[in-house]
Length: 131
View 1 (cartoon, rainbow, N blue to C red):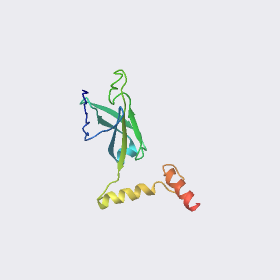
View 2 (cartoon, helix red, strand yellow):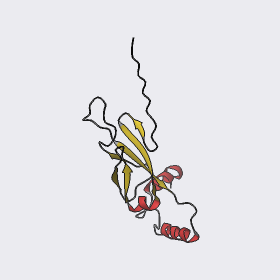
View 3 (tube, rainbow, N blue to C red):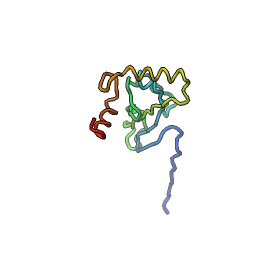
View 4 (tube, one colour):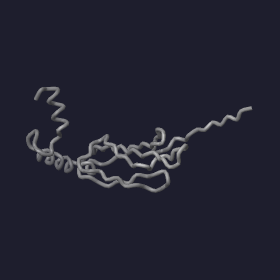
């Protein structure tokens, strides 16, 4: 007779898998996204890798750690990647002082189109309202 082996891959708390690539989502603060930061990402071997988050990073931006994913079962010299997607956390339950600081910050952008404003937002509203 035939020997049938069934393998079940246990789900991971942090990673999801597609082929040899691993995917994860990492929350970062508004400040880390705006100013840039260095964050640590765990790897399967128990260590971690550092990712540099550049200034102005938007939520949904992905970063790739090449060769840090799953080793290919058919070719041990090949290894997948870890793809990290950052999600910018919007602050909640701000104090009145924090709200005041954020309103002052918003005012520093001045008129639409000046340096530092959101080009994506302006483009979106221009498409919708023609302004």
